[in-house]
Length: 185
Image 1 (cartoon, one colour):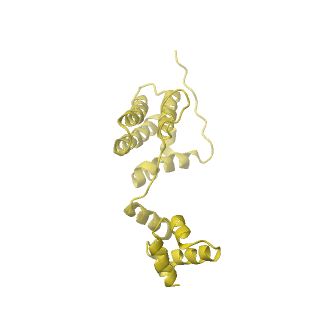
Image 2: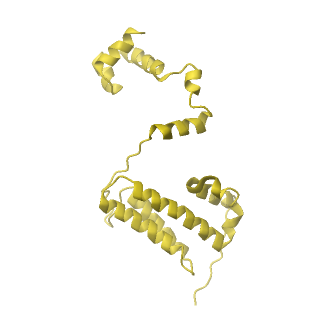
Image 3: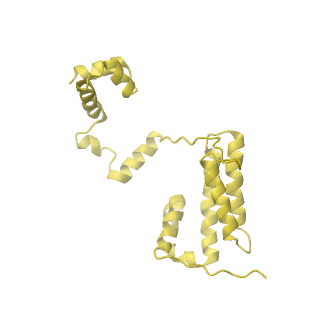
């Protein structure tokens, strides 16, 4: 007969649970902190977050084999959360394997076969800026345009003795663009 474990919760665990689930579900998971103590509700929230994770994994640009690994472990974690006798250890191990696959560890040899690369689309950048400052135009309102910052960097690098060509390499632009901006200083 399987004995039931008593889960001990640390102070602040409730909010940790809520904020973790909100990372995936946003305001749909607002005010769920107290539900962490009830297995049924906690599992329901795990399932909702995992479904969102699986959906996002299908959108990743990677090889088919890598995507299979990623979705396999996420779906296995989802399946583990569906069992009548929820085994949190098995569930946690599936999540560890998912994290490993996301970081490129897809074999049991500890080799990294994939490198994660992150980028932001313009809409994501604007959303992040709005979350941080409340207004995506705030840097411009403060007089800090990206062109102005670029001019200051060019001026500083020029004073350090770099050529226009070297500066163009540092700023990942053309030498012509550097000369044009330098003339406006």
